[in-house]
Amino acid sequence: MRPPISGEGIIQSFILTKMKRIALSFLTILLVMVFSANQVSADIKLPAVFCDNMVMQQQTEAAIWGKAGKNSTVKVTTSWNNKSYSTKASAEGNWKLKVTTPQAGGPYEITISDGKPMKLKNVLIGEVWVCSGQSNMEMPTKGFGNQPVTGSSDAIALSSNPNIRLFTVKRASNLEAQDDFSGDWKLCEPEAVGNFSATAYFFGRMIQQALKVPVGLICTSWSGTRIEPWMSESGFKNFDWVKLPEKKPVENLSVQTPTVLFNAMVNPMVGYGIRGAIWYQGESNRKEPQEYQKLLPGLIENWRSVWGIGDFPFYYVQIAPFDNKTNGLSSAYLREAQLKASNALPNIGMACIMDAGEKECIHPANKEAAGKRLALLAMAQAYGIKGIACQSPVLKEMKITEGVAKLTFDRAPLGLTSYGKDLKCFEVAGADKQFYPAEASISGSNITVKSASVKEPVAVRYAFKDFIVGDLFSTEGLPVSSFRTDEWEIEK
Image (cartoon, rainbow, N blue to C red):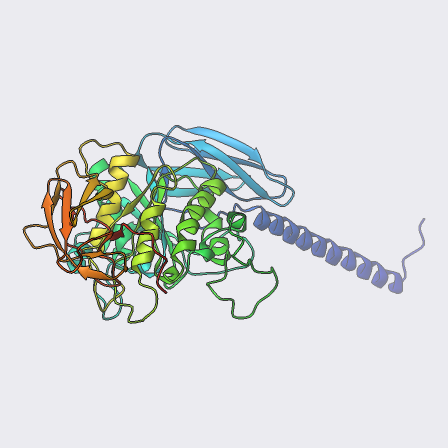
């Protein structure tokens, strides 16, 4: 027989049993916490551009990427074909794969899982365009304070369209390339349209009406910015006059610093399936036209390189005439740089708005003209719709005979027009480089120019001023850009 357990032994046994139970409970709680933590860390996390209401580029291999559990298997299932794609996340949890998108349509769902599924709902397949630049791209459809957009009330009131989606990237800057930004896809409804880029909206609305497919617009813009912040570091290899920033903490980082807006507001979506890009910027670089003539094609090549989908369409708006109220360099030289840049690369185009400038406001109210002329370029060139006039006439050659200059134009198959008004924007100069107002008349696709003040003209300029309202158009209604026939040194 076992000896009877003493009272002290009973107490010790009770305490030991109690301690085991406490330890077991603590271990159970700890295991639950660890398991829960692992579950949280394993949740799929996507960049902001992948969310409900998104538009994906049709008929392509569209990339999707994000974060998941470390070394986990990620499966993506698309409802349009019920097909599943899978890949393995890295040791850091990063993953990326491509899905095949069909012809335009929707809405669809995309299910993404690394064990715990999540769904993207109300996804459309269609045409996606990136819309970027400074204030004239950023200017919302409702206008800025004391600066209206023509026809905004009607445009906003009638804007509801289930086949257009809008994404505005929140302002941010960074010295290092980021993998995400803030923003979300919004339905095309009055409130969202009122706060969205007017130029981009009018562009997208016309594209959608013409193609009758869903259209997604991603606007990433910042008022007053130069072109250099919108390029990545690799884009400056041929521009040794641009000083790249050191990658170290900086208080009050200037948004004019090269690379910082690309890093924060473009890089996070690089690789997202797009058809092309539209651009409206240049005012902040107007004092360096010769550099800008190289930087604009440089930005296009840079974006095309990092996106890795070939020479996608890139269309931009020439800045409008505006009275800068300075004795410095006329913005006509920047417009000239933009015009020359339009021939620098394949698959690009420039929308001219010489008829839409305002003397006292750098933000022209007629944003519909900018958006629609960009859309004409896209419809004719990117989408191959026949019968659309999309390019403004350009000077082909000048011949001078007996004191009269004859200008011949390309891109004017139906000739030129001033809509019955006298042409007031031409000037001529002799060898002394002094320009005088000239008489000008239209004959088909030719202009004859002369001035009683210049007996032997050697140069002609059209609308080559800071502010002026252009009065020469193609018969199809597209304005002619300001231009000059001389190559005299820029007057600063």
